[in-house]
Length: 284
Image 1: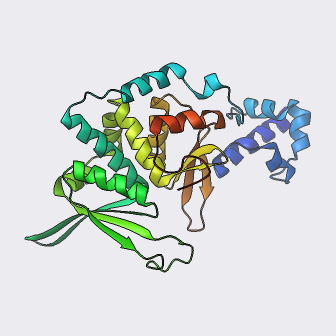
Image 2 (image 1 turned 120 degrees about the vertical axis):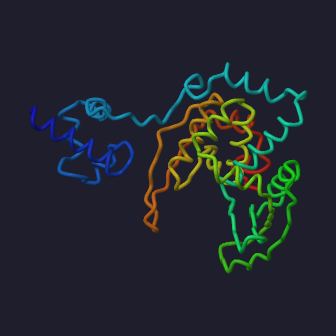
Image 3 (image 1 turned 135 degrees about the vertical axis):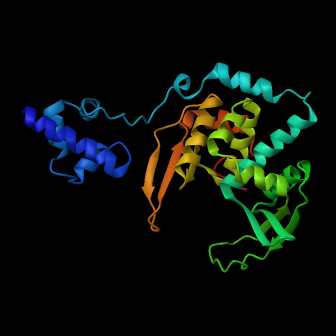
């Protein structure tokens, strides 16, 4: 029996490594591996006992409000966001954090050199929501970036799935591009966590660009694991917990990383970051 338990534990641990997530009883019911779901029930009594014995974090489908939200922290965050007397420099930092989040989610920053006297520092962003793009334009102007606004026809990118016009904005600014390119994610995180308002504005920009609220659940997806871990840390910093990181293979061969907030914290989280779009299932 001991050898059987050892082999069951090894199979569970290998499954977690291979799939990048906690195995479920349903995985074993579909004849995964050498042992059936009933083998685990006989050996450990319950499926959760098997996971605990293997040292695997349980899939938590239900969170209490106390587990999902740190009310004391969220109240502090809301109080900080209501402070209206701030310096001009801090306003620029807030706009920079928002723009940084939007660009990391769905933008592009590049440096082009065509010769010693011809250099181009490009900041580019596009979205189907004019409301969102207008906020990005406002942030650019606050930082001294002169945006060039372009409305593209819905067939411009030859994408049959795109049924809305594309609103595109471009800017050229050496200081912002060099700051963006020469700063590591670790340094960005230290800066964003230095004031919770910066963290919230980054999350607002990133959520509007890359986040989603489906079936009243907020989640973030990206193929950059370090970026998703940064987002997760900032969510925790703002007083919210997240479900276990999920990995999903894409047809391109890349791995998509997903973090999700418990359903019970959706409304509070959206009220804190106050996005201009995606305020629930009715996406703008």
